Image 1: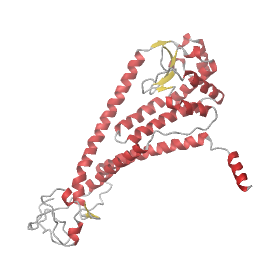
Image 2: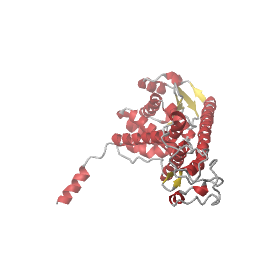
Image 3: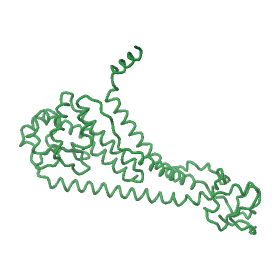
Image 4: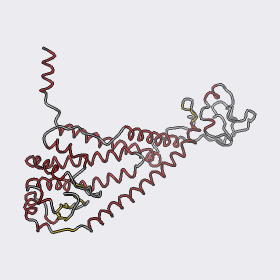
Length: 357
């Protein structure tokens, strides 16, 4: 009886509220994005601005069995290469965002735009929403039912056929969704976030997190629609789900194909699972890249010992000499020092003072 009673209580327990669960997901996405951003640029900031880890002394010659001097020489090219990758990513982001903006302007210029005053239904619906008529445009032959574009003063573009194929209440729900994008300035926010993802292209997890945020922008716009219009919005999504074509980014379109089921289920009061674009592979790639950036940044800050004093390599406290050998050849030399044996990587007969590393 106890087990049956427990099972009954579980089945009657209320589910976790949809809004609470999705807000937690959004906070997680934003926090992850911030952490990746900080971890990716902090070695450069610490090295060139505040020199945050200058506490690494030149007298620290070994880290366990690893030779710090050898690590410095091996990882310095990695750190230098990271500078080129960072500047290259910034140049690519400027190019990609500029190209996206240019393509959007070109497509907008080619649209067959009609004054919104020619459609009495649209005028009536937009008036109820309290949105300026001058910022709504009717387009003939638009492959997407509606989309929002613009950074400082976003505009809404609506397919000419929409007011003829949708009941007025569904048309109002679609426009209310687009008005929410305008008020949240989603085109500008996502445009800048995609620029950040392009700058840090070597961290694929950031690009995937930005796509998660784009999904959440659609969900937030749905939630901004009045409760009395949400079922109408779900019906409108179903009506126009077929036959549309995704528009050019950086506009915010009414549809993201993979989001249709989730949006409809939510609008109907269900609690669908929140699926992330982030994959294990992207997380692993980000971890490896950040490890390389951090390790190289720290090791470059470790100063090389002053080898110009003329001290004999066998003097207590002096670093073992690697006069002509590569860094790989003396990466592990702690054992030779502890045994008070001259490092095998340099000539056993060579007892000349060290002049450099």
